[in-house]
Length: 422
Image (tube, rainbow, N blue to C red; front, side, top):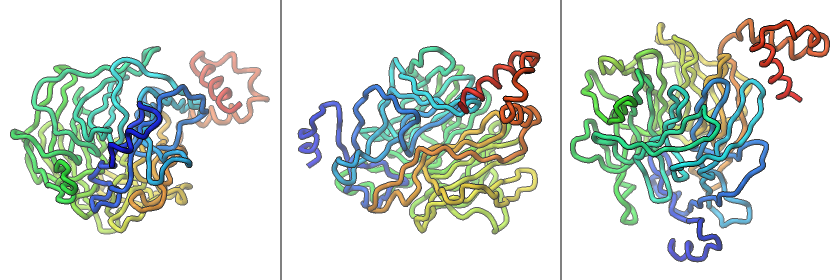
């Protein structure tokens, strides 16, 4: 049936294929009725990016870079279809001006995907894993973000690579990318850690896949893979969890394992490779997957959204204090905007920028409510410089005549903000 559908497509560059991005998609088979399409790559002139889920977003300087993910097909398309977003399209959000722009990328561009893991190190975006038209991948691509032309490069690496998978997490420490967990194919011999087969993935003679708790280190100086020998109690295998780094500590919260979405919090010392489970009070976040966890200070993590075992899409926010080992609810203005499989990035002024994601039950038979909204969370007091800048922009008509005496960098920042509001 699938081959017949492909042959009937008018555009040969578009492919239909079974939605088989398991781990968080419904392993009970509900999504087997749907198909993915790869969107035709054409020039765009939109003022903001298309709605999407399962994408990648990282920050460098005052800009947030968004790539990949998928969205609903056009209204006239076949029911239960989705589109991968164009692979050559990078959307850039300037957090000072509040404006979006799009830039075409070049080079060895990765295939369109969802569920990949993106990290920014010294102005370079690294993308690992994900789910593509042909299934999961374990290829790594790099994209320098500070050059006029955005040119992808496929990395040539040594060592035993992780299994092909998606919906994993990453910690950045000492010029190394440390990947944890995910949902993908059976691990090869020699991989340290546990792999738990998802029996539902075998339906329809599909290649078996499941959850894992593997740790793989990508050393950016030697371009090599390795696995550490860890101590302590390793967390259970999981996918669609969230990872965050504070200093030399890597935190992981929640995720899906089998039929449960977890609310455990673990910490890995990235120097000694010792695991610790953080025993927090009962009055904390409920179990979830497809959420975000963002370091917002040297002592705090910000948790937002996700998807529960009961298939509820969440809009709650939480702050975790590392030194006191306590969760506390975080009041915010976006309680009517639930999100799952979104991205969250920390801005230079301590704000968390949540972009995209799905606002309803992604596993139901109704159309997914993918979003292109940008939600901003102020999780710490603004700096005095930012407060003064806000006042200067608000009262520019009365103050602008004296701006030429300001330091050049501050003067240019005010000009950018005014341009963004015009």
